[in-house]
Image (cartoon, rainbow, N blue to C red; front, side, top):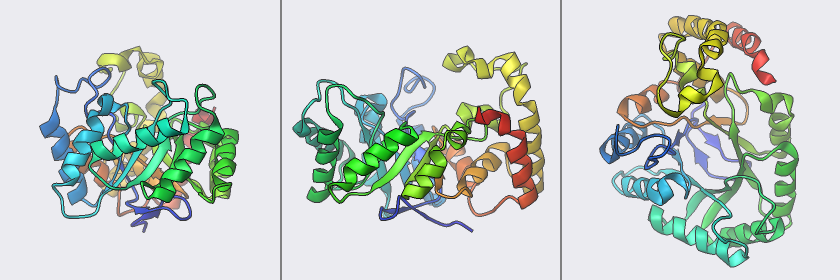
Length: 315
């Protein structure tokens, strides 16, 4: 039974599932401040930590720094160690190594910590700031003790390889590649990204592991989502009808283990080699739901059934 995971080959040890905090402070997509607020996300944090989830992923752009500020505040209210991952972007006007160092310090201030457990490049880019300068600055941040481990996000297999090689020149391993991965977003397997990450010793952080709610069974052709997701073809009547066989198998597994569909979908990821899912949680209920994915395993037969029914989603 998996009780912890290491980020990369030499990075921090974290819980086998994390919590993504994009929704903490984000008003544009998630509606923070209207349908929920600081009290709800703090309850999510406290519930997660109480259930053994102590790994949280944020970014400087989430809520324009608000997610980092909230997470830093919440961490000071608990006595157990919490591991924090955050992310860097090249804008606005960041085209020097010193601007990267400035960004790291700004995140340290908002998080109210002396060291960030995992610092990731939010997406690949080839403008403003050269890759050599970027990774040299991140390596310097490691040497200064500001960062424990370095990761990337949304990188292809070849882009990940180049980042790995760049960091290696400074004696720093690449610990993580954070990508979209779930039962119905399995493209990283066909693209060779998952295999390459395992070969390099890079951990996959799987964001959107419930496919923005698709794998919870909450949405049906008769009950589609509201908000921005209603414009996503996956949530259309046709898209939801296509998903029905997957939800059927998830439901069978959930019934056998007295779990929910979402917990089964997360457990499938937890028990994949070198993968840590980071579902979001806007409230206490969602945090508890996520925690219920830990501490048990699907049978080999259930694993095979889920693998077969979701193979079309490798394309």
